Image 1: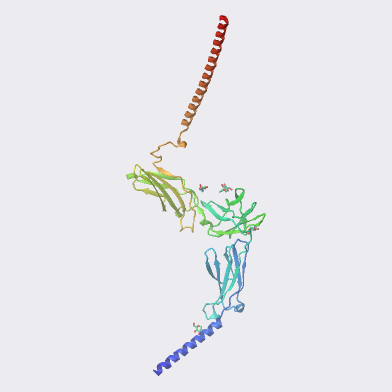
Image 2: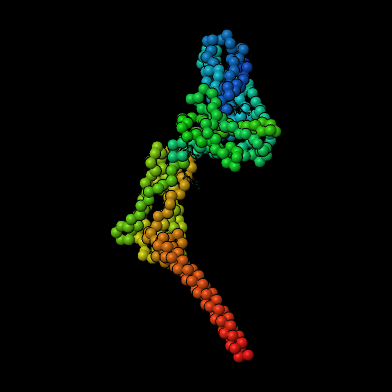
Length: 401
Ligand SMILES: *[C@@H]1O[C@H](CO)[C@@H](O)[C@H](O)[C@H]1NC(C)=O
Ligand SMILES: *[C@@H]1O[C@H](CO)[C@@H](O)[C@H](O)[C@H]1NC(C)=O
Ligand SMILES: *[C@@H]1O[C@H](CO)[C@@H](O)[C@H](O)[C@H]1NC(C)=O
Ligand SMILES: *[C@@H]1O[C@H](CO)[C@@H](O)[C@H](O)[C@H]1NC(C)=O
């Protein structure tokens, strides 16, 4: 019993000693955070440069490799992004309409820390408020850019609710391959105001942030700027499908197939939505389905059915993050014409019917005119015969008297 208690006492003492030694270790290795944290704006519409300097206590300790842990609040993803770097500068994309929040820790390794990586317990932080310049309610809204069939880009926007009259909006853009921002090459005007930009002939690299800024001026002061950052491969809208074919196969099969639009859009990335309208004597149904194929087969089609199809396409998620649906194609039907064509539609009436109607109308009109003239001339004649009769009778009466 006694030896047991002696043993436990001894163990406790050992533990204490170890703890104390580790504690000493921590104090010895306490690492300071970096200094001089700054965020610089080189005018690239949100692509900001973050810089800092090594902690003063470690400046002369060249034998101790230093690493930095940078954390910044990514407002696009609403979460903190963590980066480790040996450099003292880092460039990242920020939304200039929101606050910029940055923190940096020091990480030390090598002989100073006996080979382990030790992180500073505190960090240096910088919070830079968004420069909220411009008149309230004048920021543009619904900014959207479309990469039409991967051929050319257009961007469009709507005016802010309190946009003063005679406002002049301007669009600037920048990406890593440009030295400085450039202005929209050709504005789209609607109702007398700028509502978009036509970038036909402008090259945009893919898988690269493209930054846009729509700002402007008005007689009442500057407009509130809007900043947008996007990657062009996520803005693709494939061309509308033009070529659809329908054919009937054995056992009353019906097969619809279509051709992908010509151009740079990779065919293996396309997915299709097929809208199928079926008209039967007992009613109509409409179904929609998504497919990777460019063919759809209906197993058996009855004589009294009419089947119509339209397709549209977009890029699949495994190729790009997102894509716009193309416009719906024209409709293709089997049978082509409605069998129960109760009334001919006016635009279906051939030209010769119009001509015939016109000729008949002219004939009827001239007949009417002729008849009217005839009646008139007969009345005139009657009147004439009356007067002669009166003249005659008066002559007679004169003769009688
Ligand atoms: C450094 O670590 C080694 C093994 O990890 C250990 O043997 C040594 O005592 C440590 N030195 C110091 C100063 O902590
Ligand atoms: C864009 O401009 C090009 C020529 O500069 C023109 O052919 C094209 O139709 C325009 N597109 C739109 C959507 O305005
Ligand atoms: C709009 O932004 C561009 C690019 O940052 C800048 O050069 C220009 O002066 C701004 N215009 C106004 C009216 O604020
Ligand atoms: C798609 O349809 C809309 C509305 O009908 C039209 O304004 C637009 O030009 C069409 N786009 C293409 C690429 O055909």
